[in-house]
Length: 367
Image (spheres, one colour):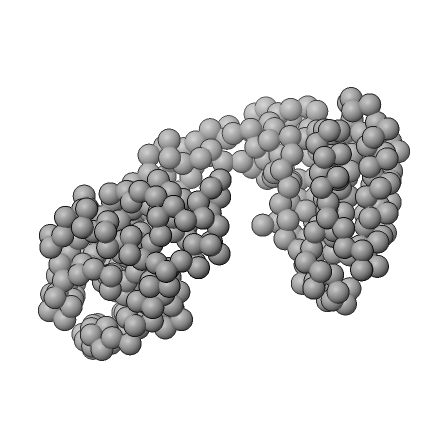
């Protein structure tokens, strides 16, 4: 190795800002406004013009015609990765694809391929329902008779999950290809292979496009973002399942009807003003993506709090109608004692609202 781990971290911190925009979430705009990110974008654009990269790609394509795929076409725009990437399709020999990545931030490269593992997990108490064009994530059991009309107690409670991860262990059939290409990489770029024990080390205080602080590895910064370590069962979240609306109880459908109307009002009031000013037919065609979480019940205090926070846009006729609908819903929620299922008057109002509301009536989809 030409560098110690600490020296590699110093290089990374030149291109990835430490702790910037990191709170409960990642402020991508704030991070992208930093000097470090500007330096990374400039490095990508500069790398796209490097003759060594084009020479290497030409040499590999000449030797393996029809087998090479350039995975770095995005570099001229300054987007994604800290490396040159290309794949070698070995379908005719063993059906696998080898990945070659050469960092332009430090003199290192790697060779790897994808491996698949199957992990059997218990189905957790979470299921998905698509109701009137909105995606609801329900934190409840599909065996709960308050939510599901005919719970299937005989259905499997486990599900197999396939996860892909990177392996650096190549087969005897793959090794000659990897050796030949690696020799070309080393000769053209004067670099060496980064060992996995260095590449999988974590980088403190840094976030990437796909990784939060504490989950970013050296490989993610110098190359691209992959699953670099074989996942253990504890690393794989338990899945939820999809449930058809026809399997829901009447009580739960009543809850979803009110929630659907409630969130439609919120979407209308919080859409950017520029979108609200577009013709109605255009808004219906482009759609709004929304996903809503619920435990399958209405909560009076939470609904009133959310209604109170909705931001008005008084200039738009659609907004005026939404504000009127908001006040009607607030009155219904305020007069409800908050116990049990929503009252019939609230459900009837929500059903009428959804049937007659023109804005984004069909295109709202799950995220």
